[in-house]
Image (tube, rainbow, N blue to C red; front, side, top):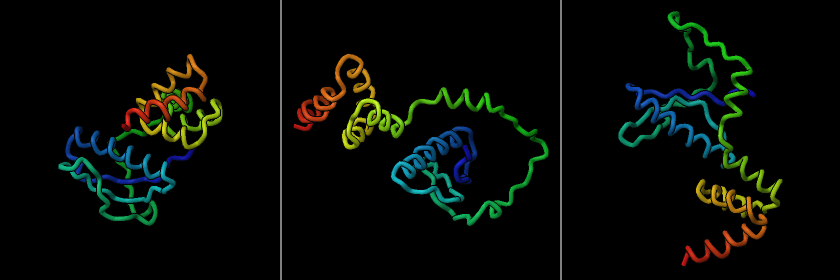
Length: 151
C-alpha cells in the first residue's frame, strides 16, 4: 500500500502540540476521505488556541517541499512483517465496520451508516447481534430505541 498525500504542519513547539496536531489531522483527513474528498498537499499551521490546523499554502508537488536529509538521523528500516503486525493490531474503522455489516449481516446501507455513525452504538449493536438476529436488532435499534430516545 502506498502512503497517502503528504502534509506538513508548522508551529509545533512542544510534544503536546505535536500530539494534538497529529490527532486533529487524523480525524480531519479521515472525515475528508469518508466524505469522498481528496487530501491536498498542503503546508498547515497548527493553531494552539483552537487545537486545529489551518492551511497556510498549497503545494503543487513533492518538489515544492525541498526535502533535505538530516545527517544526524539514521535511516529507519521497518520490515514488512512489522508493518503487517501493526496493521493487524489496528481497530476496525467505521467504513470497514459498515461494509462488514452490509456484506456479512445483510444490513442495508442506510442502517449500517446510522449504526456506525457512533462508536457506542456500533459497540452496542455488536453485543446485541451476538445473541439475536441482525435484522431484528437493526429494527429494534433504529425504530424502537431511537424512536423513544427522540421523543
